[in-house]
Image (cartoon, rainbow, N blue to C red):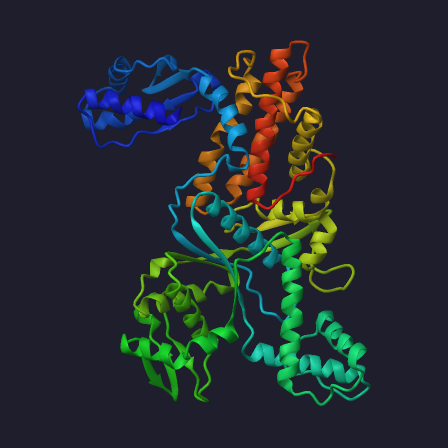
Length: 535
């Protein structure tokens, strides 16, 4: 309907010989101001040097469409449209026909997108920041795929470097301790219970017979065990990746010296104090950074440059990296490296997720009651469930700090948005039990009240909301939409009897709630929430 009205206004402007002006059609806040409204007359006032009320009258005089029941002009120049509701009723069968594809589109046109998220070092268990980044990255991947983008979700496994050496040394120290031998943790060792568990498992299976294994064995063992834990937790969190890229494998694919040679050839390296520096201050950063240290070893930055070069070599049109807020200073140098390698820096977009505070009974929760350590993703899932975790982390824009209220997330009340939305879905499932195969209506003539139209209007908006969420990369728009749709359904249910004595009316009502159910399901699926069919 917005497109139809936009086209009608454009035709009117053409008749008035007005071109090259953006036409905005919006929904008024108040129903008395029509179904749709435009401010085009006021936009044209300065151009045409005329009173906007007069311009509005000229535009309205050129519009004649049977779908528009009435047009009103309101000061200082708004044009308000009252339209036939047929488009809402016709959309019921569209939803029922398209089913799980309702809301999808091809606006992405196969554009190749890489979304890298979480990518935590395999030296510890996933925490709340990883949970938020995971929910955002996976939801964005689902939404963009739904809109026709060719999306690859990716996890970068940091399985090289000093942190992996310290992981191996930490396991050795714990293994010796369990074997009853003196041991000392490395200076930057890892003290998590998961490290002790790896050492204990090794002892349970082999006693002290593996004391003669070298450091490489323990590094490999620790990495495999920790990566396994990470992906087990992510799978439970409903995240599965298209690609998992190993830093170690990447180091075998690319010679880091060759990467430095490319940067040098393009004029972006220099030698100082025995080290090789990247001249990113000539690009987007405010200072330069070391690539190769005095001892000849690469800094952690150089493999990251090679990794992004590899992404570009794989043909991605756009790379989206999701980092923690503590990586703020890393963004400029990474974009600089893309440019320095001879590529368009706009191909890389870095999103920084802000902090998460866990709150219970108004108090900030910093430590796990069970372990005394930071609360992990697994503990959060066990406490509130996957649906609540995915919903709440998808509820806020990534660039805002958020409080995760444990008590609210677990409560079975309408104040809990997860419960409120789930109850709407379960209520529909309950009504439809035994009615799943109800036939579609050729025409909808019994649906006439405002609550029905309001919920159908929200269903009708879904494809546009998804497109906006995909193009602006804002998954929280879907979460907000779901809540609004559930709210309108609850209002509809409070004022209408679905099952009535009138067979035709009942049939139309059943089809209406079926299309609401399908839309709720599709929207929730995009943010990784599986609604319950009964509560």
